[in-house]
Length: 246
Image: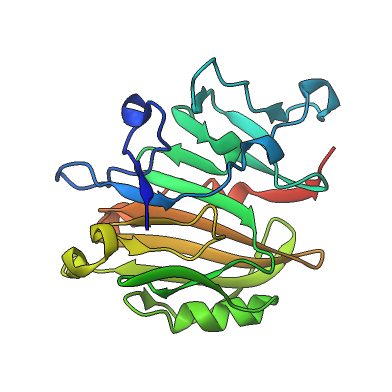
């Protein structure tokens, strides 16, 4: 399966989508994203004039750029034509694929609709084909908690942004041998055209939510973080609220 590298920092991004270097002192980690159609055209931010006071639109990307650097503030990011989310972002955050990925320090916040095609890899290491799990929050949670390679916490009920759902914490330990995996990377759950993979170690917060009858997944991902470093993850996910798109 072909893939494109997701580099660690905006400075390294060029035409690539950055993912985290990790919080360790090791060399920056790399991750890969499955090839697929661009989602940028479907996630463009609303004009600032249409937004409530205090809510910002993502700035337009410059010519030839795949990302944009953001000032601190609360931003509205569309998920599609009818649903969006507002989120508080600190300074030095960069937005990629029109807000699908929000990179802050070594952490990547990914928020997306999880419709019928959303699923888990058949095997995160050796067969990274995304297999749909079924349409409900419970369907996806059951598949995530039995996912090979990952150490997944027991499901916890959660409310986030006005939506109810389930919270999971997922880990791939540093001792996991990712050299046996396709591309030396372990696949994450996702939509087939936006799923990413990366090396061990990995830690992630996963929220699987029902937003007015629509399934939404929020992932906060870090490659290379220790438990202590991951505990200091930015609190952007907790600031999310869901809202109708303009």
